[in-house]
Image 1 (cartoon, rainbow, N blue to C red):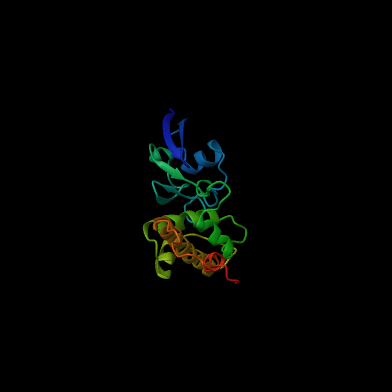
Image 2 (tube, rainbow, N blue to C red):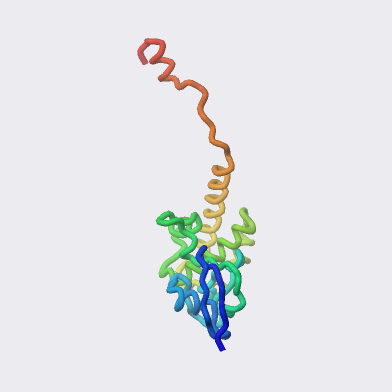
Length: 184
């Protein structure tokens, strides 16, 4: 017998009637058409299917959709702001932390959960968070470097947001020269 599922995915509310044994990854990919969340191993050993549920990283192939009833789910598609990539996504690109890209969305989502909880993680903390994320193409060093870079980018962005706008009250040199009538 089908049950009602109410979830918010990437800021949009959805209501479905689903079989109780339906996995979260199936809802994301098949019912919502969000293909950035990849389904690979079906045993929760690769973590390519990682999404955020109420801000926590979960492997969507190992959780029933009904377990997230009433919760907020964020997928890789929910990170970018229009055409502007999230700083973590951009850091992965800039640091060559991907090859084929299959596992990248799960890695980025796990990195997001880590950086939301710990904005300045050590290399060891990054490695602990990323343990269990399988990447067959690239070196894990580049992934660690991308996450460290993303942490710096997020800290800079947050510092810029919290800093009040300041006007330059000092007259610029060229304005002083122009007002005095003397040449530059």
